[in-house]
Image 1 (cartoon, rainbow, N blue to C red):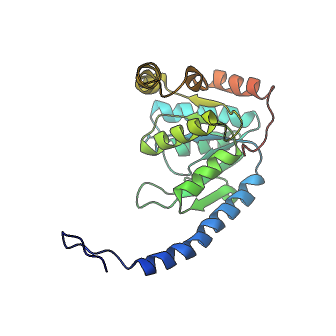
Image 2 (cartoon, one colour):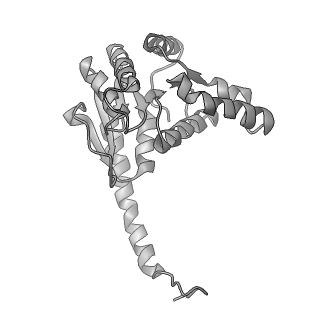
Image 3 (cartoon, rainbow, N blue to C red):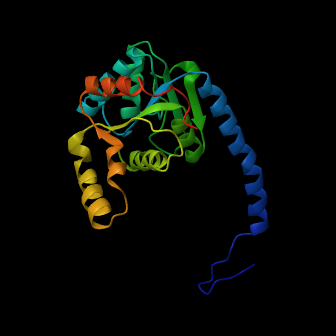
Length: 232
């Protein structure tokens, strides 16, 4: 067994390799189950945002209204299944008697399925990367509400997939202009103009809209010219 100068020793890599090989089957099972369950639900909109947003917060209320209006248009609503903005999204879907989907993740804190998910549309995942594939494959639009690390991860994941055309162009909307302003200013001033790491079109593919009615109209107009279909 290799020993480093500070006295630390590596684990038994033979055991680790064996465990990793069997882990593949668990990962495959999550993909297969997720594909089978979500393919049956039909066109949906994914809504992302903080698990820490309280029900009396303006963004909780706004998320509920957006989700309700989108559900009234016929879209299912997909959330991360937990509290905060995720709960607000499922709450809005429930108010409109729409399809309310929760993609739950096993975490040591802050993640329990919220009560507004349809009982037959609550999916559980152990792996974040499998869960993100489920969000992106079947969503016909992405609503980014204010959030933390997880929301930023999902924001840049979706933006990258659209930018690189790994799936067809899909509506991506950030809600809460005062929250997102600093990030968009930095992307425009530093990433675009100063360092030229992105192009002008990369920013144009992301819309910032605060009005629920304008969000619904934008998505409705988008799908008068595009097909409703899985993204890849």
